[in-house]
Length: 144
Image 1: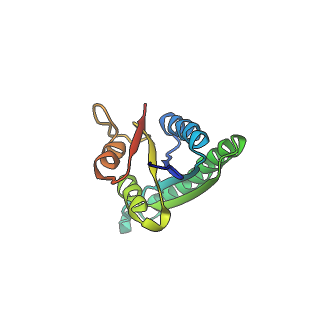
Image 2: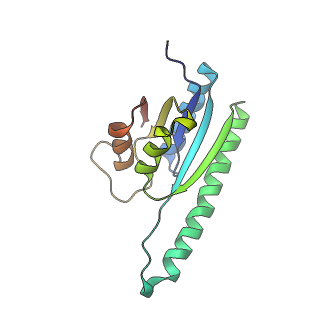
């Protein structure tokens, strides 16, 4: 029988990502599982002519990530769910799949929002959730 012990919830601060967290909390209660929230901070390529703005953007984005993860931590705590968090840098879809493929992380399920804060939106799914759905080797639940 398949046992869910650890659920990965990628967050970006969007309403959809927090709906995914709510669903993960529901699953975690039913399965007596823990939640890991992952936030990928976007990295903007820096050119010599634009050194200040991209660096400032990354600083602000990392600050935003910490606030989002703090909110997630509080929600998990209110529901008596074990919680841990990860901040990484770069492409969110790639980072999510890479994190799950690392066997040391022992992730059993990904619960992800259908669309996030990204400016480019696909017709039915966001590009990140679509990427994760097709590249993950473990079950993925997409929340609308």
